[in-house]
Image (cartoon, rainbow, N blue to C red):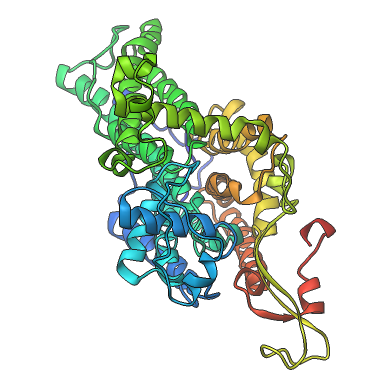
Length: 545
C-alpha cells in the first residue's frame, strides 16, 4: 500500500508547472522490490533530532517544577522509595518500622529493621529510584528524580518510534508533544512508582523491533542487489540469525520484566507481530510460499533474541539478592536440601525460584483477590478515564490556613488522571487504526493496536482484585501513537494544497484543545491549593471524586 506523504514537500526549485493539457499524465513507474524493501527514512535527520530534543525538553521543563513537593511519601512511594533505599544500603529490601514515613520526612532515614521484606515486584525500577537517592539523598527530590528522567525519556523514545513508523518528523514530534501534555504520564513522571519505568522499557523494546523491521528488509534488499536479481525467485533468502536491534529489544524486555511482570503480555504480542513482519518481508522479497518457513527459521532465533535474552536479563536484575545472604527467602534452598529444585539447581537458584513462586502466589492468591481499595478502577473504564487514581489529598483546609483565602475551604490533591480530550479522541483513533490495519493492510497501525490490546486486555482476567488507573501508563504511549498516525492521515499529502490546509487546521485545533485541557487540569496534577468549588469544576463526573 502506498503511504501518504506526511511532511510538507514543496516542488524543487526551477521545477516546471504541471501541464494544463487534457492529456493524462504518464503513470509513475512501479517501485521495484528493492525499493519497496528499503523504504528509506526521512532525509531530515538533523531536523528530526532537533525536533526530538526540543519536544523532549518541553516535557522535562513541564515536569520539573516543584518536583520535591509535597515533601512526604505519597501513595505507593511508601513502598518503592523505602525499598530503593534499602537496596542501596544492603542489596536487598528490608522491613521498616510503622512510623518510618514520619522519621524519613523529618530527616532520620536510617531506621531499617534487620528482617528482610517480602516484596512482590522485581528490583529494576527500585534500583533506578535508588540511583536518584544516591545522588540527591533520601528525600522527596531524590526518590522522584528517576521517574522524572525516565518519564521524559518515554517522550523521546515515542517520538523516535513514531517518526520511524510514519516516516515523518512532523508526526513523530506531534506524538511526543501529545504525550508531554497527558495528565497521567505527567503525574507518573513525578511520582516514585514503578510503572513509568516499565512503560519506558516497553516502548523502547517496541522501537527496537520497529528498527529491526527496517534493518531486516534492508538486508534482504542488499542481498538482491548483491546477487543482481529482481527478487528471491521463490527461494527463502538469506538466514539472518544475529539481528542487533532484535537483541537490543530482548535486553529492553528483560529490563521491563525486571520492573513489573505485566510487560510479559506485551512481549508475547510484539514477538508474534515481529515474526509476522518477517514473513511479510520475505514474501515481498519474492519468497512465495517459502516465506512461511520464517515462522521456524526466523522464529527460533527470534525466540532466543527476545525471550531467552529477556529471561537472562531478568535473572541478572536480581544480582543484589544473589550477591547477599539476607534477602527474603535467600536461605530456602539451604533449609530444604531434599527439594527437587535444590537438587537440580543448587541452593541459591532454588531459593530464587521459590521466591518467584511466592510472588506469583501473592498476585493470584486469595488475599489480593479479596482486597478492596477506594480507588479501584476496573479495566473496562481505563480508555475513557472512568476512575482516576488519587495519589495524595489534603482536604478541608480552613480559610486562613496554608494560604487558603476563603470564604470556601480549600483542597490540595494530586490526581492521576489522563487528559480526557486526548484519551477520548484516542479511542476513536484506535478504532480507525484497527480498520486501517486489518482492512487497509497498513502495517503501521498494527503497532498501536497491538500495544493497547496487550497492555489492557490481559487485566480483565484479574478484575477480581483491585486494579488501578495508573496501570494504563502502559497504554497511553500507544494510544497517542494511534492519534498521531491518524492525524497524519488527516493532514494528507504535503502537496495537496487546500486539503492540507484544512487538515492542518483540524489537527492544530485539536492539539490546542488538548494543551488547554492539560493546563486546566494542571492544579490537580501538582497539589496546588484550590478553593473547593474550583476543584469541583475539574471533577466532571461523580466517579472522578
